[in-house]
Every structure is written in C-alpha cells, then in structure tokens.
Length: 130
Image (spheres, rainbow, N blue to C red):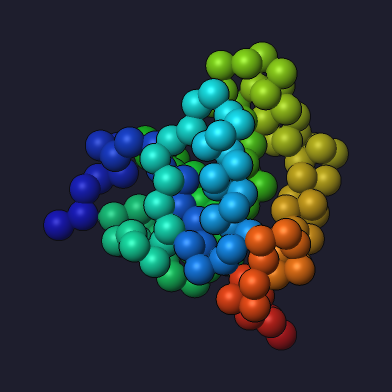
C-alpha cells in the first residue's frame, strides 16, 4: 500500500536518464542551502507520489506533504523553502503573474531543448506531442 503523501518527506523527482537534469540536480545540491531528498523517477515508485510515468517524464516534480508541484511551480516551491530571503522572494515571484508566465515559458523552453544544453544527451529529448 502506498504511503500517504502527507507522511513522506519532501522529494524532488527528476528524469535520471537525462544528463542535463541530473547535472542540474547535482548543481542544486551543491548550491542551495536546503535541498530535499532527490530521486530519479526511474528508481521511484511513482504511485506513492500519485504520479504517472508520463507526468514524471514531462517535468520535474517537487512533492511535499499533500502538495505536488510540477515544472516551473516545482522550482518555485523549492526556492520558497530556502532559508535565504532572496531565494524565497524569487520563489514567490515565480508564482505571481506576469512572473509566473515568464517562469513557465522559460521552464518549457529548457525542458523542450534540454538535450542541447550542457550535460544533455539524446536521452534527454522530450517526445514530440501533436
């Protein structure tokens, strides 16, 4: 039986087959003062986080308590949980229009072309949608 999300520690779920994603998570671990547990979705029981493989493949997820944040919202939630005021402010701004629109567009652009970014490989390429 899956553990209720409320009992799980905060977890950042990412695409472990993507070199760019793995490099980004390692950078976050070195750079941010507070980083939750991290887990490649390929090694995670996604049902325990109420996620599907399609959801996990399409974006990073930050799961904490009863909340799930995907994509730009996951990055914003991660930043809001930092002890430094500047990072908290950045995380908050990323949730308020028009900044949230810019954050979502930037995240979408990076996700779409992550295979071309440093650390990226052909495995990072997102499936094309019609």
